[in-house]
View 1 (tube, rainbow, N blue to C red):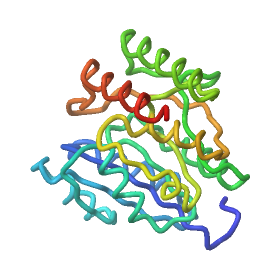
View 2: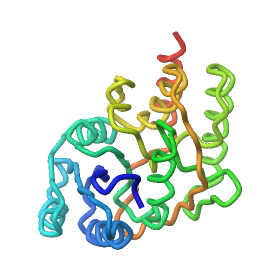
View 3: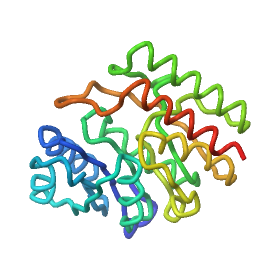
Length: 228
């Protein structure tokens, strides 16, 4: 349980055409956070033109809108969050709600950021092809080398923050470079970061938004922009 009965947990979920998944995601979160003071924030892309926002509202989530990309949506959602612990997760059922308590506990014991990793003991993925495994390991190597870090996963969005930390990071990435930017700026700001094992499930329905080569270049560019 949270350290304080008044501690608020904010769950921030960027969405784009996730009407087939969002109800199950929110139901899973609610089941895991019974007894916790929490809020659900869905940041829906106004271009999605489906029932994601309608379903989320019906299930008690606060819905706000963005029209730029995943990074921009996450930044907007984190700014709107009021919690003492802020948690970012995906809307495609790839993130296990049962891992939420681990992300919360890491902040409660003193870390500034807790990030899930698919590549440490206890973690894994059912949804990452060999080419993306190679790309992720390359980006991990590059970030660890350039910024004297010790990450095992670079492109995974399931993570938690202490209140006020996202503002300190001054995040700017609008798309899929956002996770890499968070990891780099956490090190540059001297924040206390811990990785915990996470199991990535296959997308339940709909089409994945990540494009391997296009977004790989975005991630590489994000690393290079933050070297100096």
